[in-house]
Length: 319
Image (cartoon, rainbow, N blue to C red; front, side):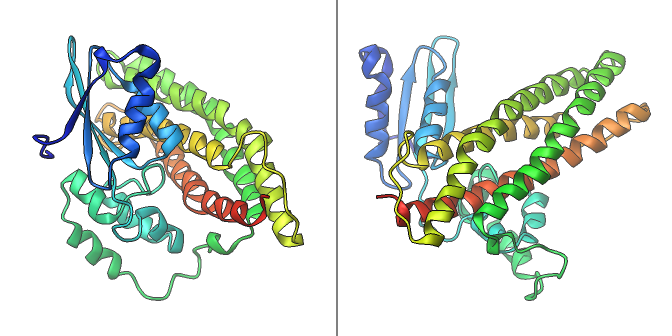
């Protein structure tokens, strides 16, 4: 655990309500990479987590020191994002590296804005082993791996909608049915199935609300940016301000869905079937694993490729 002896403690209970979050944000913004602060509160400060993630992005580590019922303390550490390429950037250049990260349970999509060193320290993994396996990949990428990073942003946005959004919409109804059925039939002997069904409902609800926002607002604006850049035109700033604002919100929602899928993997012991698994049980776990694999690639294409391209284009074409 980090040394908290000299870490500033913010006692939120003595701060005027309207100043609580602004005070925390101000102190966080003044931290340097690697520095921390502690929030002391009389209830779970989870809303601060979501606001910080939404407005600042995935640039911090959130660690509970105490979790109630009377006292809640959270250690917030600002990540040092200059410490080498991030996991997401590495996978954006060569998607084969995703298989190495998956082997070690390293999140390359929702939590991809961390270096190998940082994520290995958090998980207690030997970073030299991970780097050794990454370096052992052949120099020449295999011919069947698509170079998404070279695609035009407009084409990539359309691809995400037509391939990944389409897959999610088609997969959800069947997975609702499968997870509910196995929870109902096998839940008495395998109570984890009741939790798995709840987590999948959370994922489905999150994505069904999330995807239209990308399709109606964010992706069309990314296409506008691309056309303006291609034609040498300058655009007025949109009503939502910088594109960083909707991107932060989308990344926050990706993280929420990713956390639920991670919980499903943990509860299912990496989708391991018990001896009494029926055909539906088997199909449900197979489809959940397929869904997770697709979601990882889906979110990777957005967080690590499309969104960084959009932020670069905005710098060039917004007045």
